[in-house]
Image (cartoon, rainbow, N blue to C red):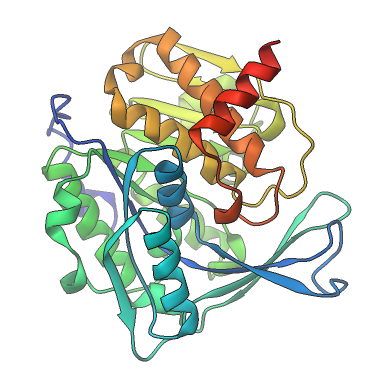
Length: 343
């Protein structure tokens, strides 16, 4: 079932900018990242690993909450020690976990991740299957999803059933209740059966999103090898008529933005990076937290540039510590970094 199967009654529903809530609901995977205790080594060379909570949608939910926003997580973990640990981490970070479910048969997903000396990220996934892949549509907390000012998701949940159908159903509920749909494909090729399958599924829901965040590498992949720094490539091949904002994150170099009315670039905030794990998710949380408070940002270039500079700072701070969730910044930390970078 591709885009057309669920888009028929979605595209003509306007976003209700008068909603009083600022809730950001994040759908997808939550897992344990195992990160080497030393930097710049391959997984095979790592002497030891430190466990850190992760999973892109969960990272974003915690990121929004850390910034003082309102967030919730919808997903599934194993009914095991790691799953209960993750639920407790959400609680400690003031993330609404009422949409979280526990699987009695499948384990919580594990990922070993490192940034090698040559700058390349290396991943090793343990999900055969993991609990997040087994979330059922009947297990969705529909009332929670309907409250979302913004509904955020990725593409990893599209890899296998039943989670794929569950994500499509959740998107439909959110759109019908006036939520802004936010999509970060978060490409992890090693999890997909083939490049072709990844490209097809990621693009199958592309035209349903109101806000999309992608990286340069994802542009190259999704366009079949085109130049990710060519704005015309982005506009011709990835921008769609219903899209309100497309952001290309470029790590320390900042980001580019594209809307129906304007486009531009916002420079990065310089820091000494230690581990880039979760930096993109921190960027997304910074942007979504701003949008949840004020949707007019999408139509005001000055406001949008301020929101994107703030998001860049969120990503920068996260890169200064190991792990994703442990490194998500507070509002004060972001404001301090921005103040010091201006002086």
